[in-house]
Length: 197
Image 1 (cartoon, rainbow, N blue to C red):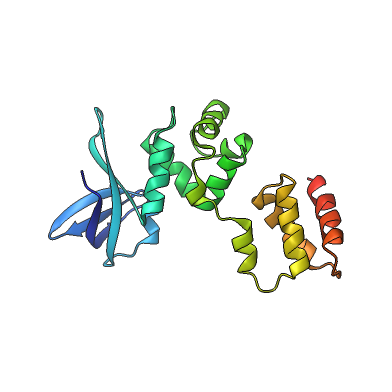
Image 2: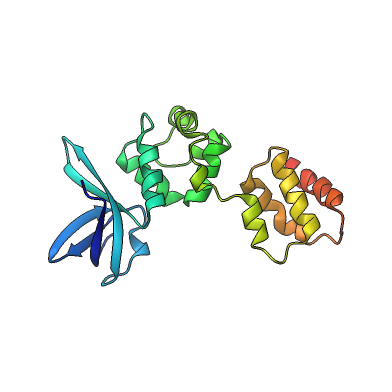
């Protein structure tokens, strides 16, 4: 079983890349083929899959985390390699993991090949198992030097109240425009904005 291929990107298509390793070209299906550049030296983390229809197929990822997320999606009943790739191609790992952690079934049904039943199964099987992929709000906020300590506290409070990071991120630009140094006022305004949806 291959763990990774270390070689040169010889070809790029909408659904796969070809990795040249010592003169041998490996066709590797990828959720993000255009993240690579032709002629680039790259280490591609791969997962090998066998099916009666397609034989052996390689699926490749830029890092171990992406590969790990792919394997977790494959563990869900009703999700095959093509569906898992489509889900990963449509969404970044952080947002996808967060949606699963928050149980956002409706959000998950927007991915190709994912109906309500499959989305519910994804949440049931993976909720609480994706901690490595969730981009925590406190880290995100801490990286933004423009956010005041009061707004920072207010955003964390909204998360604690049960709102998702995605929902809070959506209203943050509006909260930044408010002229106040009170976390309580930020929270009240934030709740008003969140309840409008």
